[in-house]
Image (tube, rainbow, N blue to C red; front, top):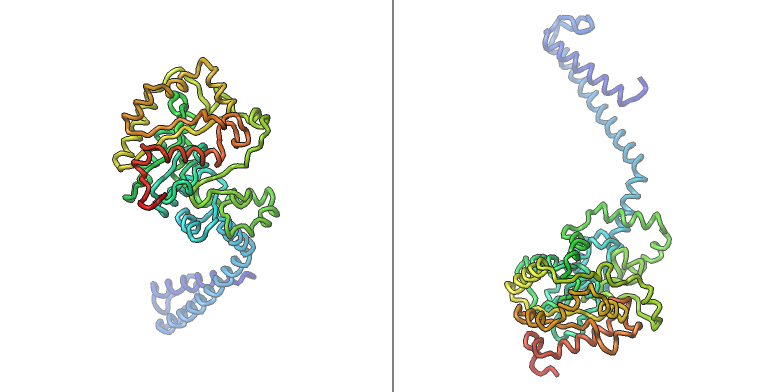
Length: 406
């Protein structure tokens, strides 16, 4: 028998079987092969035990060689797996979000954006818990350009691109306040289409409370390596201030205050005319009347915020002329008109919500250079909007200027 492992195993089995037979039959009896054993039973058993110990030692050595061969055979695979883990960690794609939140706080000008939007909610909740800001902004991508510097001296964090519906808003507050923290004020993106009957069906599944799995995060890196490994490798030098695959690859991510700035606009009006945003398509929904179900969802959100003594400022941010003209001229845009009526303005006031409608902002509505696309205003417009908001007496009542601040 040429294989030492097999030979050792067979010897060990044979000697053990012989010992069992000797003990069972006694000295001087016939063993399993018909051979006579020694009349001295004790001597026979002692000799057999020595053979057993020797066989066990040989078998142990053979197991050691087997494991060593296995490790050596798998070493290329193990090395690749370790390298992939290190690579994914360095990009920030597999870092736990609490650690990403701390990493971003440890140095200025750090940004993060993962390769999969499913991680945004977990990341932004972690940042809110890390910073515990006075003011939290919340909403869809239309909230991206709210910046922290305009709220100084109050601390601020933008949790945009995590929530699209009023049920999302309510659930975000519940997650945010789970450990006892609550901001003084929430600034929420507030669009007329959130009150249309069919809006929720497009967005309900976008609120990703459960983070992606480790293997899903690794797959994102593997897919990029298969697609273009050299580009990712060359961009690894950016990981001292950028983390997350999207951030590393694009050079852009969520800033330390949570804001996210898109590509700057240009004065070319054709860019917005052909940007794919049209009235009547998602998210710019059309409906004749406000949905009672969405009104109830909004009321539940407001109730949860009030329970945690959070003041609410709701803002419908500016839109480009193409969208505004389409809404104003559409007979199906009943919700758009209804929400802007004095009746509903009074209702928001009775609910204790400070509401601002900047959808049609004079001086900007027809200037494409101030829009990323037809429904996403850039940071310059939002700075102008927030100056108006912060000067409003209703807002100053909940965010008073500190003494000595001018």
